[in-house]
Amino acid sequence: MDVKAVTKYVRISPEKARQIGRLLQGKPVNEALAVVTLSPRKAARLFEKTLKSAIANAEHNNKIDASDLIVKTAVVGPGPTLKRFRPRARGMAGRIQKKTSHFTIILTDD
Image (cartoon, rainbow, N blue to C red; front, side, top):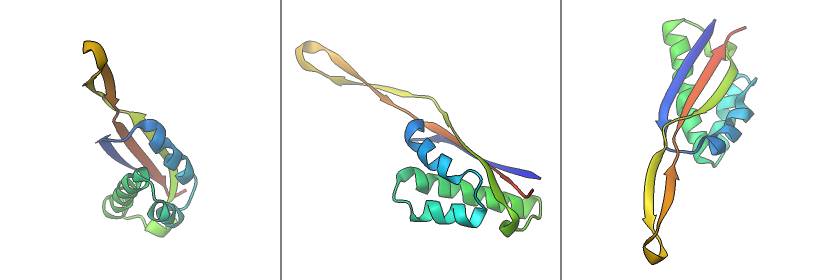
């Protein structure tokens, strides 16, 4: 049985968040929680929230014990980009792109 949790419109670039996502794939839930709890990165805090949500979904909706779960996939996809401008010299404008991400975690009990 696969259980899914999604967090959308997170204000972090997908490239930075994918580094943490790669660490979680294939690990048991307890070990994955330890990884995101001990990591000092912003993406780890955000993945922790999504991972806890997926665990709660599995326990509440499907009556699956949390100790049996394994992280099947931890995917970070790009979200919409906020486009801003910063004044530059000689009347020009520099473009600033504030990227967002969508986190998806799928847990399995196989």
